[in-house]
Length: 142
Image: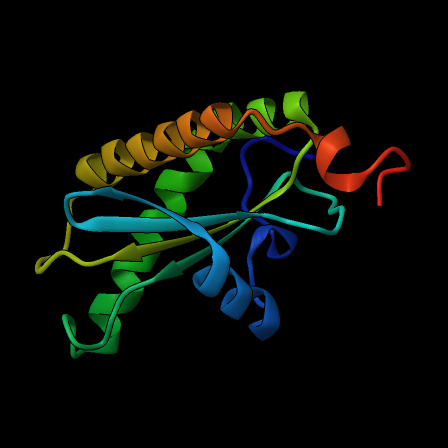
């Protein structure tokens, strides 16, 4: 697992996983951003799988939506090591969905700051729930 890449396996792509995430996941908010997270029931090669979304309602042009998603992915890529260390320590895997709801294209610095804040909030929520992998997957890791 390389710390400074964002591979296909780290992306949340399956329709069933996405619908479960948005239906059952817990939410965290910061101005202009919202995130849902759900502890995954199946073991994965990476501790977290992530989805980035920008609503068409706020940005009509696909080029703008794609630019924002690219900024968010880069900010996540640079900040993911701390959440990975935390999740590996706890022995759990997560599905995370991050939705940008702002009205203008953010600067990279702002996106980086907000993604870092969201990841800290997710860590805080998991600590509050006091969950570990052995409780979640059972004794044999399933």
